[in-house]
Length: 489
Image (tube, rainbow, N blue to C red; front, side, top):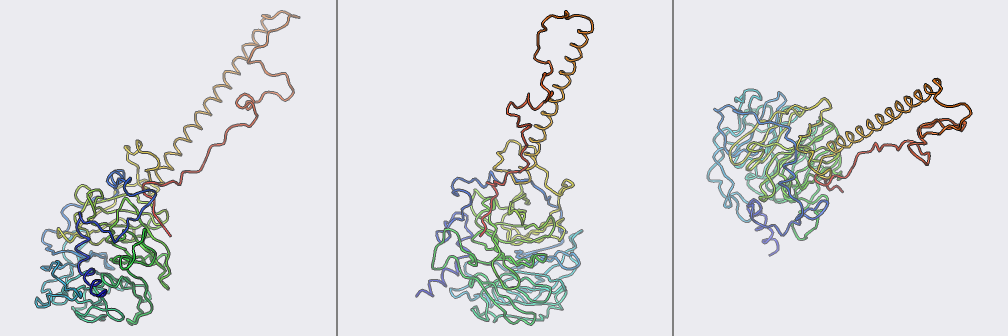
C-alpha cells in the first residue's frame, strides 16, 4: 500500500508543483535570515542590476521549435537545443507506475536536436529523428559527443559529434521500463568529466546521482528523496526533490545539481560525491530549474527559477560562487520568463542562452558594459536602499566613498587650521616689530600664542586632549548580507 501511494505521488508531482497557486506542505520553506513572510522577493529583484541584454530577432525566423527542454554549447560554439517537436508532457502522459502511456505514437519524426549559429541564429546542423519520445536533458562534452536523456524511454544515450548519423554509441537503461539499480526512472541530465567518467541525475522518481566510468559501468551513487517519509525545516544535504540538472565546475573538480523543488544548488566533489556546499537565495525563490557555470570572475552560477508565486518573479540570475550572493538578474520580457527549463553560458560569461517549455523559445543574452574591475555598476537608485539590502561589492563601494570623504574633510580642516595659525603668528610678530607692545609691560596672552613649554606646538594636543592622535579610519567593509544571503552547510 505504501508503495502504491508513493508511486501516485511521484506520478502527479510534476503537475502539482507546477501550479503557482498550490501549496506544498511536504516541502518546508527554506528560510534565510528571518521568516519567509517578512521577505519581499519582488522588491529584492527590483533592486538587482541587469547585466545581460536580450538579443532581438535571434534565432533566425526560419527556426521552428516545440517545447524546448535543454540548451548547451558544442566545441565550435554553436548553440544546441533539444526540443519536443509535437509532444507535450501532460497529466496523462505517464501511468501510476511512471510508464509512458503514448508509445503508440512512435518516436518523434522531426529533428529534435538543432545546432544554431551563435551570431546569425541559423541552423548549422540538425539530427535526432525517430529516436526520442519525450526529450529532457542534453549535454555536449569536450570531445563534441552528445548525451541525451529521455524521460519516456527512461534512458540515457551517448551520440558522437553531430549525432553520429542518429546512431547512439551507448545506451543505458531499459526502454520504457522505469526502475532502480541499473535502470532509470525519468533521468534528467548528464555531466561528463574530461577523463570520460560521467554523472547522471536520476531524476523525477529515484532522486539520486550516479557516477559511471567511461565504459558505462556504475562507480557510485548518492541521494534520496527529501519529500518522502519525512518533513524537514531545511532539506538535509544529499536529499533531493527532483535533481533536475547537472553542471560541472571543471576548475574546481566539482559537480553540482539543481535541486529543483528545494530551490537550491547542491555541490559535490567529482571524485567521490562528497558534499561540498549548497546555494540558496530567497531572491530566487523555492524552485530552481537549472544552472550553468562559468569560471569567469572567479566563478559564477547562471540560474533560472520556475513559476512559484506572484511574489517571486521568474527570471535568470547571476550568483557569485565564492560569496554566494545574487549579483544581478536578466530576462526576456520585463526581465522575466514564463516557463524556463534550462540555461547555458559561454566560458567567458559573455553570452547566456535560456530555453522555455512554453512559449517555445530560445533566447540569447549578451553581457552589458561593466567597469574595468569586472564588477557590475551600481544603479543610481540603489543609493536610497539600506546597506543591508545591497550586494557586498556595492556596500564596500559605498563604505569606501564615505571613508574617503571623511578623510578629505579632516585634511582640509588641518590645512586650514595651520594656515590660520601661521597668519596670526606673522601678524603678532609684525606688530611687535612696529612697537605696538610697550617694553616692560605685561603682555596679554592670546589663544593662538605658541606654548612656552619645551615640547613645543603639537596639533594632536588641540584635536585630542587625551593625546590619542587622529582617529584611525575603519578599513573593513560590512559582511552582513541580508537580502541575498545564502544558506550553506
